[in-house]
Image 1: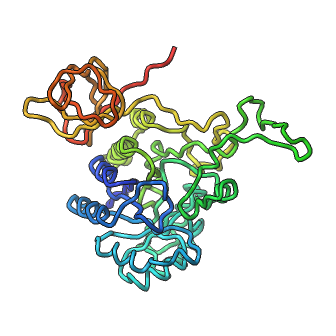
Image 2: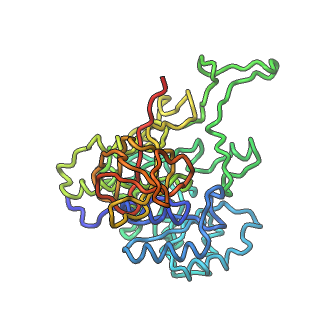
Image 3: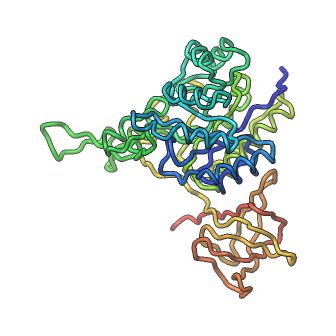
Length: 413
């Protein structure tokens, strides 16, 4: 089977630093949110100046930028949309991601030539719906997350050849229907469909019978209660061939509120797996190292969601809403001096003598030790405990700007 056109690896970015990191670590495209009309108001998001800079950075490297305009709007949410869309066009964005027919109608009127992608919030689960949206001028549909490989393949076979399919392959899963959450609004008054999710599905719940107030019953026999809305994280890195063969155009990573280290780690792992597939599609073998890399970022336990089969009870984490974190991201390289000292911005405490790992774009993981450490003035120091402290390190290996340093977390005895 020939695979002439490579699938797109689509990464999230919550700010300009993460956008640049995503592209440097291997993303083909990045999706971002502006200051308005998106679904992640808790993220820093991008000013128009940042969007313009991000687009310029991406286009110089042959990459693309998509902007979310996927709020599920009420009447007042349309105020200012026309101007916002025109400003995005001036920035040169490659596509807008939308979910609402009303927003689509405004986009088509104001920016008739811009590429439009239909968000997963539109709940597209079948080829008839996809064909309907194609007739409305939609170039790409981000399918609902409740679909199997078989269903995706059938949709691809029954839509126009120039319509693209995008699916999520990694990241957090909501207890909702393709992201249309109601529980956050019900519990806190914060509307997840308008960008203010409180992540209520991660909370600890117990059952209370109406006539027995104060008596709490866990669904499972556990004194901690039960996180029965708490899904594991999606991870499809072991199924790269199946995803590509199903006809998917773009593999999407969730996480606009994640750290730069998370973005780098996940993008790098999927980049390696995808590139390995295209070297010899028939001989592709899963490398456990890729999964190990994903586990070195903050994550929940993993699930394959609906791709292989409908999720069973094991796809929920009933014990904790906490993340698994085995490594600390301790620093990011800013530059390298002529004398070989590495100018590093601290992100977690590091000390002389620490055994560390270093990752970089298109590079194997490096293992080394912090041999020496100096402050900005060149004075020797033993540790860097202050957030975003600039330090100079002697590492004994070759690194470059935006390489990342991490350290395994010691188990508490």
